[in-house]
Length: 284
Image 1: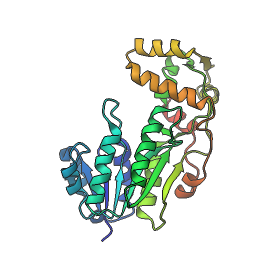
Image 2: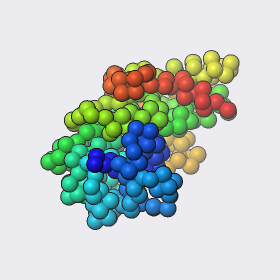
Image 3: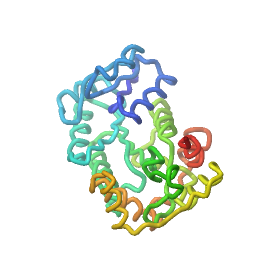
C-alpha cells in the first residue's frame, strides 16, 4: 500500500496539504507525524494515522515514518534553531525508515544568495542530494498574510517599505493543493522544482490594486532600509526578523525572485490566485 506521511500537519501548510490529500487518496494511505498528537485528533477521527514525531527526536521521527513510501518534510521556521541540523535529522530518519522519496518545502531561488533563508534551504537540498534516495525540493514563492508584507495600509492609506522589485506572492492554499497533486500523482519530480506565480507583483502594483479595490488613494512610500528596520523594531518586531524581511526586499529589488515558472499553473490546472485576489480577501 502506497503510504504518504506529512510532517508539520498541525501547521498551516502541512494541514492544508493533508486536507487536499484526503480528497485524493483514502485516509488509510495517509499518515501525519506531529509534535503533539492531541492537536491532530481531527485527522485521527477521519482515519488518518497519527504518530508522534519531531525533528529534535530522531528515534521517534523514524518510528513515525515507518511504512511510508513518501514523506513530506515541511521545513522548520524557528529562527533560534539550527534548522539545517534538524532537517538532517528528518532526512536521516526517513532514510533509516526505508522511505522511497522525500519531498521538502524549499524556497524559490534557494542558493547561497542574498536571501538568508535561501541558504538554509540550499544546504538542506545538498543533504537530500547526498541521501541516496529520491527527493524533490518544492521551491515555493512567498506566501502568507499580505499584511505581513504591506503593513497597516488599511489604517494609514500608505504602503511604507524599502525599495522592492517583483515579488512572487502566492497563496498558501494553492501551494498545498499543488503539493497534494504531486504526492498523490504518478509523475516523478526529481530534484528542485519551482512553484510560483506567473505574475510577480511590486508594491507599486499592490498600491494601485488597493486603490482600485477600496476607492481610496493608497500611496506607496519608499523608506530607507535602516530607517525601516528601526521603525519595525520600535513597533515590536524582533531585530532578526526585521533584517530577514529587509533582506527579502534587497533581493527582490535586484530581480532575484522575478523569474516565473509555469509548473504551479500546470499542476493546479488553472491560474494560481493573483495577489489582487488575496488583497481583496484581506480588505476589512
